Image (tube, rainbow, N blue to C red):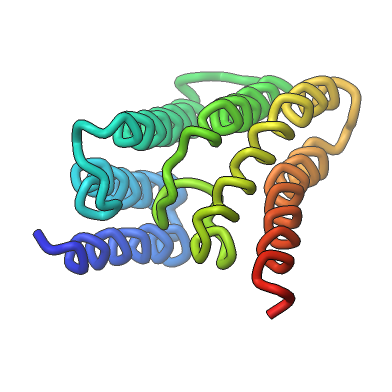
Amino acid sequence: MSVNKTRGIIIVLSILALAASLAIENKMVALILMSICISGAVFILYRHLGELTDISADNPKMKTLKGVTIFNIAVLVGCVLAAILIGTDIWKISENGEKYFAATIVAAVIFFSGNIAPKLPYSKHTGLRLPWTVTDEETWVVAHRVLAYVSIPLGIAYIAGVSVIENFEILTLATIILWVGIPGGLSYLFFHKKCGGK
């Protein structure tokens, strides 16, 4: 399969997932269809990582990319299963329990991503993909090093805040904005300076 065809299939599956979430009124059916489409897209990405990234199978960086993709699949499957179990009342969980479950997923993503970020190869498919980070490899490296530095303190602050701050949604949103915004902003400044303000 050609690279363009692979990318096309991933894009189509992503669009179908979005369409299912918006067009289907039955939340359970929408969730199942959406998860099938996203799982298919991630699986195709996993199977064709070498072609999409020009990294050979025996390169250690490929192992890192595959590890990230497997982690993404595990999080997706875990969240979908939890949503189905909760939605069908098989898993009865309190509102507070749902909050802590969601916080655990968010914290796991922050800690895992922070740990793996400096090892991620320059890629347009996996990592902190911003216009300036995918344009310049040195900017990519800076962004992912900063992401690694901020992940542990932000993750710890987030976990501590879950039991203290009442508005869980605002806490989560603020944490994600800082987590992406700090490395994104600093890498943009680096890129802007490197390119001489152009």
